[in-house]
Length: 352
Image (cartoon, rainbow, N blue to C red; front, side, top):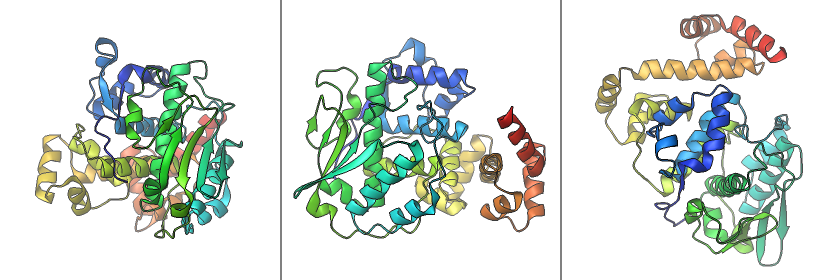
């Protein structure tokens, strides 16, 4: 996908309602922005501050992590995650972009509990249609915000498809359709698109060339369709096609890479473009270590899994501990309680 995202950005005030709501719901918004290298004071002093598009997805990822919710609480409806293994298997087995689009549409419809995504096909094109006219947006009365959120969702969907299909989606994309009017303000994120844009449509559309959509694509052996997995894939894909200066600390960047499955110092250093010695030195300068970040990441993942009802044994095996006792010791050291006690407390809180 040959394109430039250097001008793809948004203004901080455009997502202020999201940040404000997240803050009142228990998210440490100032800490979140600080970790991204964004001065929280700019929310009031410089609301027009330009933020890289990829940072929107980083913000959404952290909010989604807090609530274990793919929509990052942009929807008022709890997602239906029990989609079964069938759809995931279909996406993993997709042989073409066409297969991936149809599977992805089905998967997200199942999760959201409605027919918000569907496919149109002709002799020359294949269109993924995203109709959010009845979607229960939390901020549905804020037209500017819902348009921004819709624009960002379409970009995320295309980036996800491009990542899953080894770049086929980028080669096949012919044009996109948006709800917003051509002269609406707050459209810096639209610089992402390097194809013609149609404005004022009744639904969002990603329109692909049918011939390319039917070409065989590389197999994708593992697809993590959890909230964290999807955001991680999109963020890494955007970073790959448009490298930019990353203002985040080494500790934050290391934590994100560990969350993405890079659990050795060698693999993290390689992704950061530094030596292992440099990685250790930079983390030490930030008063932490790779070991500390790794343990905290595992404890955070364990906490989410335990809160969702996953057994202690399953969590221990998933995180690669040698046995349950080693996991129990590590978790209690990080969280002050045993995994079983943490799971009981989480269940009691959810039922309250």
